[in-house]
Image 1 (cartoon, rainbow, N blue to C red):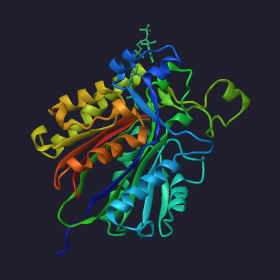
Image 2 (image 1 turned 60 degrees about the vertical axis):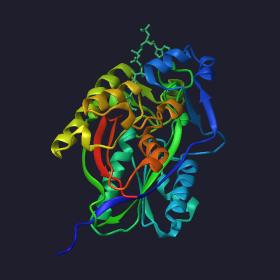
Image 3 (image 1 turned 180 degrees about the vertical axis):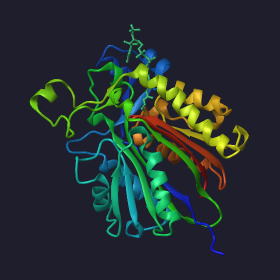
Image 4 (image 1 turned 90 degrees about the horizontal axis):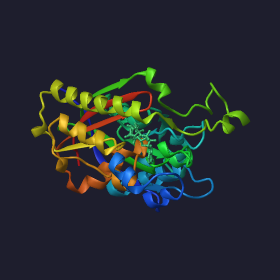
Length: 330
Ligand code: UT7
């Protein structure tokens, strides 16, 4: 009998830029204050990628090289690269192609995946299928966003939230049952008006008018998104546990998308996990969109043990949301 192949996470990489934008610095840019930002979001500071022409691929590339070094492989060993992002270097070609070129992953094919803050979860699920099918042996899944490229630093509703960063995982075949066990992924396009970047696509191509109307920046109706996010992320996590006959006691870590500490707390509470079992780095990195979940794994990897049950959960633009159950594999 052939053994079932699962997609195990066998290495993690990450990269955050050096420049730290603090709440105090934002106080000088817009009408806000450190106390409001910390109590309403949990954020104290975020990283910003500076430099002319510096792009999402300039964070994804060092993150993937970090991963290769940890696993002791060469970029030429990578078969496939999926980059989840809403801030690609260019509309086309795909940022995955640029990352592969920058690191010398000459044997890999790749593509970008757009699912906003749920991008990493969607890409992980997609990449896992390439492994489970037996078709590929080394699939890299990246979540990377240079949110500072699309944030309006005169809009206090959004500029205090977002930051830049990149994280990634390596997926490899496993026959001991480690890796992605199950995922529930959802999307609902009726949410598109509440969180979007209106112009620059085919509906409203760039023009003097779209620039003047500031439509090339991320727009969010925070209160509405919060309402959907706080129930969406908690509900889907609870649904995943129930579907797999798991309780909070079976879970070693919750790895939540870092959009707002209040949303993270609500999700943890719903599935019965204390704060000590929740990965939280929103305080230092803010909301890095597709990068939040892999950046958590990157920071916590030394505390993870083979076989640990992890619940990854996200909610974001689209709307998109979901949860994944992973048995840690390295
Ligand atoms: O990652 C993708 C998914 N995104 C999310 O999950 C984000 C969901 N939304 C949120 O996290 C929250 O809605 C925000 C953090 C964006 C905003 O927090 P909130 O508690 O929902 O605030 P609010 O928008 O209801 O605004 C409350 C008050 C308003 O003033 P008034 O009308 O009560 O006088 C705002 O004008 O806070 C004001 N405000 C601010 N004050 C100081 C809004 N932004 C700021 C600010 N500094 N930066």
